[in-house]
Length: 139
Image 1: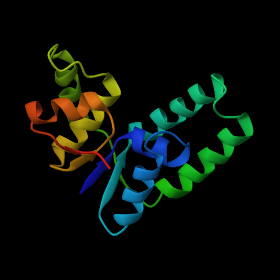
Image 2: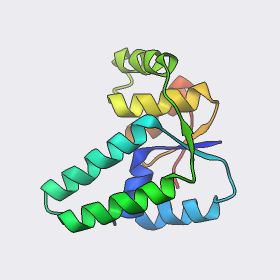
Image 3: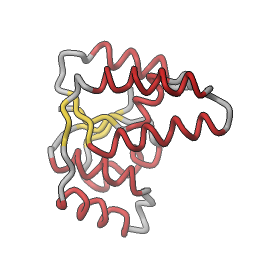
Image 4: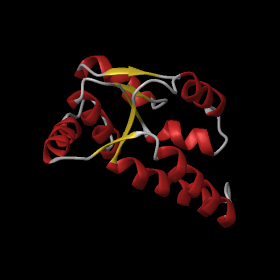
């Protein structure tokens, strides 16, 4: 199973450096089990709002992208977050040598719990994945 980091979905819906690779990976892996978690939608909405505030996305585009995201994400397996996920994420955040942000730690905790591969373009996650036993790849 693959767990998607929110950055993959943001790239898939709002053009950036990783858009082509993210879209190609999603298209090539349609038959694979792909999961997101409860946090993904919150983080996605936050990323879009930031892009709207800084002028990279118009308000009408924001609504359109959110609708498209909801339609596409309904096809993914939704992992409900548990206390176990948050405890593991908290432990990952406590490690000063990792330098993970809260959202990244949640995605990593979900992937670790399910022995899944986390798909991400986040350099911090990619660089610490081996240290925490996380299977991680970039599109």
